[in-house]
Image (cartoon, rainbow, N blue to C red; front, side, top):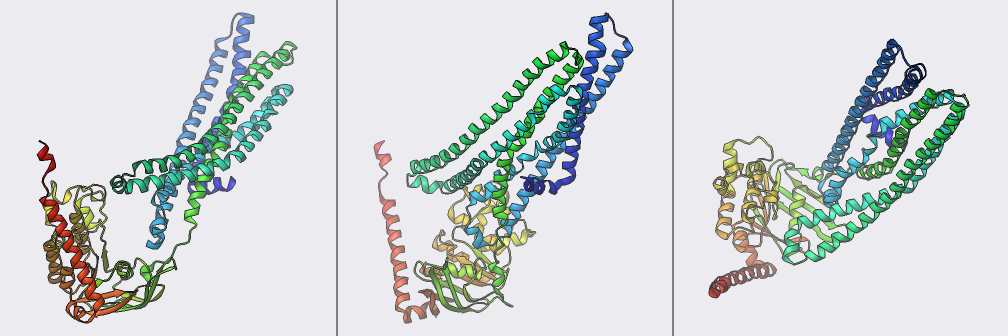
Length: 582
């Protein structure tokens, strides 16, 4: 508990000190206000009833003191709440920044092992939970000072009633400690289930089209309901325990108040204390009830905060993995090479096994192979997204740009998606758009400033691919890596894109994973990959003549494409059943 408070507070120590100072002023004025109640009772109220009059100077003097104490006390409250809130907000901002910085610093292999929803939870919900204790903490810490001076004042006023009141303090502290230890496990469980639910919801929303296409809404609803039920169960256990805890915090001081009132009446009757002293005594004890409850509130928030902070430190304590991009040997020109490269998924399934390839600068090469041959893995190695387990990768580091088959577009404008915040002139932007055959962007409602929506939901697959390609071209790459990037384009548009790249990006090395025979035929060379190795490297025509496996694969590609075209023609020829019904 102490280490958490120390860790959080040291981020903005001055703000926290200001909050505690304001709370201390409030605590001091709380004790003084009870003294003023005693003065009002003994100097004004009692004389007025017993003697029939009170001097105006006495009334004005006591009221002036009472007003001064009230004003200073109010200032203490304002300072405490203002600086306590600022402390919590600033610390939450710092923690969230630490999480984001850590996530950004981790390389792609680490990112692929994480759940997006869980990372978002740690940066948001967990950061907020970790700082919840900072809101009541300044006041709760100043209550220690309040309890000390109040104890002295209560004992000095009347030692019998003082002992009764002081006996309540260890009882409340014991209650808080027991509560904290028992509820801690339930807060941990609730935070864990919250992370699971956030991950599942994010995953379900990401795959909403798949879910709806396969009619799996009921299955997803049941899955989310099950996770939510576990979270609800953990939260209800916390609520049950907290309700009992707060009920006891309410009951014990009230019972003590009744005891003090009865005992005090006998003390006043016997002349051992004045009516003003009893009034002051009861008033001060009543004022102490809320600060004591606030200590309990701070302690009740502690398990929640510790649970959130533990989840954050779990992420922050993960060591930074080596950036595979740094392992790429920088190429002086735009040539690419893979030398005896080996790679496997999780050290189990071998993808590449002693693969060797050399691609001269300025050449366009099609990577061809059956499904699972390792074509995409080759591009990821050249792009520095993953690192080889064996061998060496040579590429123009930071200048090899990869365009994925499934392009990712941000929810901003077309311009933002192409420039990614970089300073790119209008001429360079237009050139990139023209090479990618993405001039349709100018015809959108707001041109390049049109908002495309999350993941480019307002665009077709081919439009998204061309914008993603324009984004890579705008970075003026030395090597352009295309992972079946033009798969959503019709053959005519695809041929135009590849021809533009060849004629207007001269000197740029192009490596493209391809499955269309027409695309493959446009490349200068072909890398035929099978069994995790380069089976052959040469022109398309040469490989058709010399490699039976390559020839069978191309024939299969042509057959599949012909079947798809025939199916499209058949669907187009079907009568419109809806029209017939009318």
